[in-house]
Image (cartoon, rainbow, N blue to C red; front, side):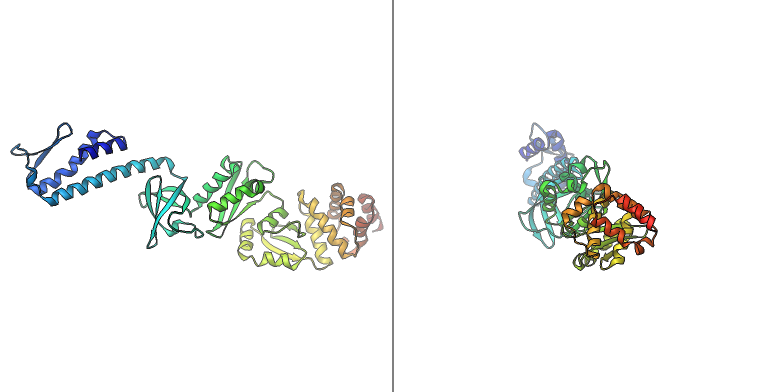
Length: 397
């Protein structure tokens, strides 16, 4: 026992005398109960001497029952294990709210035994991501935290702080607070939507989170057992927000987005894209919650829709409209059976001219849209000054 205590003292970096004193305090009441009299236990040069407190005579070891010896041995082993555990748990203090790798040792009756930093943790399956495969020897990243209710250290893969730490570990811009996580919407094991506050106005913030060739996103999804991740930056152009949020290909679909105080409208060219948005009920409701506006998806089917789209586009005060108006012009050209080539449209509709188109449209009265189809035709067909066309149009009125 002396050798074991000395080895323990060295292992946990404590004075052997302190360890021995604690061991004696454990042994003494067991022996006194067994011998039925008070005793003194003396540590004399690593040799334990037991004396009858009253007679001062040495206690004959043969007088100690086998049950008492077994009890002493169990108590000393428990003391050694508890001391080691306290030492290990003291080491854990420095890793609270830190991501650590743990290994599943066993699964039994809904409880999962995980070893992490030489500590054993018994977890319920609720501590895991529902997408996790819970099986022996599988390794996962966990967040270490201290549960004040249970008064012990715990591991989890299924709370918001764990998700935040995963993003910080993989995205340096979030770690250095150039990008901040404003809010997280999550269906564990299925999808996580992260609202980003672009503090430093980083260009292409969502692309930064995804990483080159998607390596950051892949790493996060791996840590979350394949859970889908969507980043959302309110400072991005509306079209980018929509296409990324609803997983649409902006090159495949022509989309124009506008918003007022009550609605956000998405103009689309096909039933396919409309269905993809409407049938994604969870994301649709989440979009409305994030933006605080009701969402309208409008299929462009007639002239009135196009005119509404023009009006709404004029209310967008951001650069993205300069790109989306090209799509808008294509829709108008189809409406009036004008078929200029894609190249010709892009040549004619320069950024400067698009700005002029918007200026013209913003300054028109509502009945302009009903009376002056010719103006729009001329914009598309003729390579002349839009300002000049606008002046002629006003004179004709």
